[in-house]
Amino acid sequence: MAGSRLELERPWLGDILCRQTQARQWLFRKWNRGDFDDVITGQVEAYMKTHQVPNLSIAITKGDRLVFEQGYPPPFGSDVRFRVASISKTLTATAIMTLVEAGSLDLNRAVFGDGAVLGTTYGTKPYSARVRAITVRHLLHHIGGGWGYPYPGGVDVDPMFDGSTSGMAHPQLITHVLDTIPLRVDPGTRYWYSNFGYCLLGRVIEAVSGRPYDQYVKEAVLQPCGITRMEIGGNTLADRKPNEAVYYRHSGLSPTWENDPYALEVRRMDAHGGWLACPTDLLRFMIRVDRQDEVADLLTRGSVNAMFTGSDPQPEYGLGWMLTHVRAPVIMGGGPVSLLTSVAHNATMAGTLGVMESQILGDAACAILINTRPATDFDAAGLQGLVHGILGKVAKWPDYDLFFCGYP
Image (cartoon, rainbow, N blue to C red):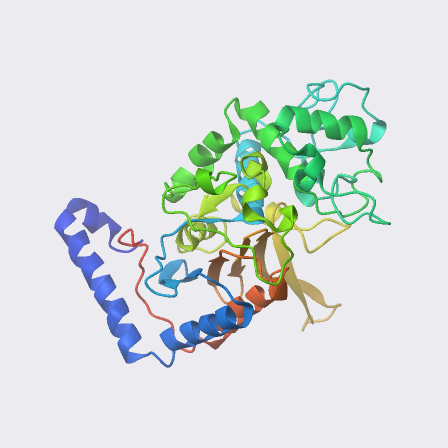
């Protein structure tokens, strides 16, 4: 980043530039409120009022520069940590790709069976041909053949949210699923979103790296991004971590266990939904896997391209990332082409809603987290609309970078 060499050689210069950056942010907001600050705050406050949201935190980058961070309503801090639910899958997928780049893992390697990544560690019965056919790539794409939802007829539930598995640790849960829940189709043929599949990927990371899942992700993914505040969350209110938000059941949802934020097995969710983060740290991670040039990515371009490529059964879900494409005509002849316009992941579970999105064409990214799951925005479509509304209406972007001085 420009100026970083001088900052290292002359520490006093870094302090001056940091102060200048924060001053420029304040001045920009004062001079251009109609173009920037009010555009964001007005839309955020409207969303919170419409959906009865207690607290919301947002961060925005432009060109890999942090240009906005704010908690609502003030003085709610922008550094408060939230459960990020399924945004955790992006971290797991990135960690898998670091093992692939190190030559320790092949995406096409089988997960279960003799010679497979997890071997025959789990289960008490012989594996079916379908189970032995599951690969790491299948699990990343949610095309492992089942263990997700919805199934035809709705006869199954995601094992990670099945009340009958409450209290089971990973080994017991995986054995239970392998022994009692058959796969519905051949792996690679159908897309069924599976939290359990990402639970298995967490165990793959542990088996290959020889370290606990969260430790490996911190060392291989988070620390290189300069992120030190992220960790796996706890289950109950008594397990609440320092500087973590309090979660609320939305008034529009029935008071049942599946809508209770503190009845969840969050620690067991680790690889598919267990992480805590603030939006700023999510974007510290996002700018290191976004194919932009301002800040070097953690992975090679080939690995990032692989993560941002969908499967035949579901072209709009890559390796741990939700993808958005548009069809564009080819000017010099030939048929239309599919252009990747954004990569994202949402977060939806009891007490939590969130979105992290990077717009490829606009070179802007946004992360928003809230501490309830509104009955009026149950699947985060409105929150995604808020992201698009904000990024689409900023007419003038500031040129400072709050990441430069380690802020916040």
